[in-house]
Length: 193
Image (cartoon, rainbow, N blue to C red; front, side):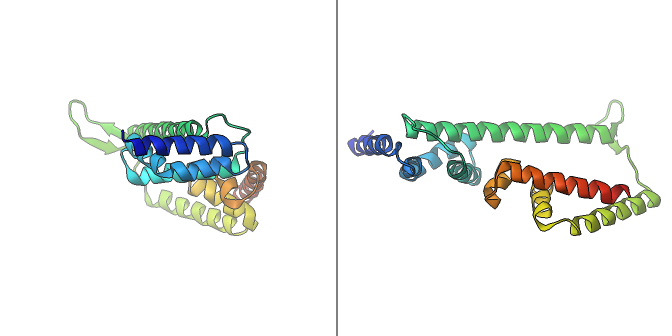
């Protein structure tokens, strides 16, 4: 490593230790280390877009999660990034396993071959019933209060967690949960009647 690189690291560490006690200290260290964090994340994920997503998620967590004094803010940020990479990898594996199980449940393989047939074959009546149910659901979604509808769509359609929704909408996690409870109660009532 060059002397300049060591000097940059020492400057970041000095700045991070001094600023970690102030309200914006962790954000200051984040901005000072942003390019290093990005290189670290690209190496971990192997994908620049994924790395940028994790970096953005790190920034959001810094904004929404209160922290106390941190002895080594730089190490804290790198650990936070690493934890987010691991969380995303685990979520991806769970998604793939769910998809594989779903696919296996819906297909039947001929013995001794790789050929598969779809187990569930729909008829016209099933299609009509499904369309009617979708229309009832869309109609029920339109009658939801705005906040509950927005939270429901972000969670159920976009797949965001309650914490991510809270950060995006600048409300508390319990506020998100209350909106979801209103949405679910309303939809249940609309679809059962």
